[in-house]
Structures are given as C-alpha cells and as structure tokens.
Length: 250
Image (spheres, rainbow, N blue to C red):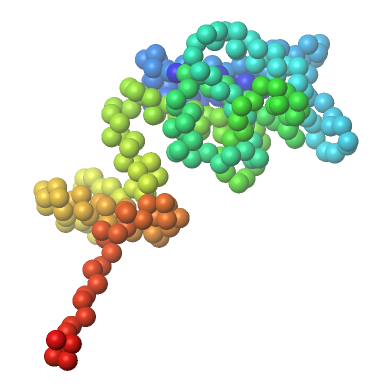
C-alpha cells in the first residue's frame, strides 16, 4: 500500500513514520510512504503557498495552484496503481476511528493533504479531495500529525505489518470493547499481585475473566460501545432468581 502526504513540512512526516513498526514495514517493502513539499510546486518566485483571505479576517489561506500541481504530480507517479483516495485532515471532517481505518485499508493508494495556517482555499478541496477526516474535536497547528496517525492506524491492518491478525483484532475498540488489563513478570510489584486466575493455567477461566474485565472497563469508560454490542454484555448479567412458589400458587 502506498501513502503520499502533501505538506509544507515533509521532514516532520518522514521522521514520525520512519521509526518503529511503520519504519520497519517501509524497509521491508510492505508499505510505501512519500512526503511531498508543496512549496516545490509554487510558481511564486519566493515559493509562496499562502495569501490573505477574501472577505477579510485574520491569518493566511493556502492557495490552490501549488497544492493542485503537487497532487497532479503524485497522481501521474502512481499511474494505474489501483484504487486511490484523497483525504484532507481537518477538524471539520468525519471523526476517524477503527471502522474508518478498515475502510481506508481497502485502497491501494491514500493521498493526504496536511493543511496549515487558517485553512485551504475551498476550490482546490472541491477539485481533488474525496473525504475530510478529523482525529478529534480539537485544533492542531497543522495536518501532519493527524495524517501520520491515520497512516499508522491503517498500515497496521495490512498483511505482514504486524506479526499476525490477532495482534490487532482483540485490541481496544477493534474488538468492540476496551481491552482487558495485561500483566507480565514480576508476579508482584510494590504489593500489587497479578490476578490469580491468570496464573491458574485454566484457559477457559482466563478467557472468561478477560471478557468480564473488557466489559467492565467498557461500561465504565466507553458505555456507548456496549450499546452497539448488547450481546457482549448479556452473558455477563447476573441471572435473575425465579420467584419462589407458595402453596397458594400451586
């Protein structure tokens, strides 16, 4: 899978995505990540990529021409390389989550536009963007970090990036629940012991405990997730005791 980021700060993107699992995936040829400097496509002699907004207001707006020419260069490079989707990272977009990551993982190429300043001229967005995405209800100084987050989340769903599908299928949110607590050695730390059930060797009991803990944490922290999966909570509800019959009921 190929990822391209149109940005004013390509080094920022490549630094973040050049490390750890995503960096190894690139070196192994499992994914490609390319960062393109929008300034390289500016026709202005000072490589200017922004201007004052029509109608007045504070700040500067990113202009159409450098972004569009950058996009065209990427599309020409990709050629007939499969399905492509262009994403603009903005607080105005659809909230990104695991379901969206799965949708995006079906594409062969994802092109991201990382905005800056007060925004991007709407005309170039209308011309090239397929979808606007937000990573949450807050504002950052630019779209580079949000683009990196989406690329990381999508990449780990691709074959070979993680050791096995089990590495992500049972994780928080991906499974429909928050993940259960995890423990490793030592057996005790500052008076806190590993739950005995995890030391029992009884895998049925361990699986039950993990499910119960997942439901407990989800109910406590993200109860809205349980509304989408009522069947996950049903087996854990206490059984109602039947009404005791009296002689008069017989």
